[in-house]
Image (cartoon, rainbow, N blue to C red; front, side):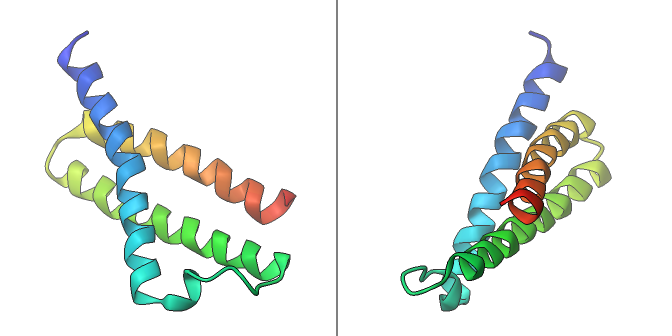
Length: 96
């Protein structure tokens, strides 16, 4: 494996870690996002969609940071991970 592929893999891993960090931050700062016990299915779906959207925003922020730092291989990996999250978001929003 060459260095470019390794950096792309690092970007993919970071692309999945940063949204988890974003969800953790959002759940700790907004307590209404952490309780799903008494919510209807529709309300739960809306909250999940907002969590995924926030995660994508955090991924975009980190993506542009790596582009600015000329680390294009890592940015490519982040874009791949963000694309996977985007497909998940579209499924949640339109098909569930």
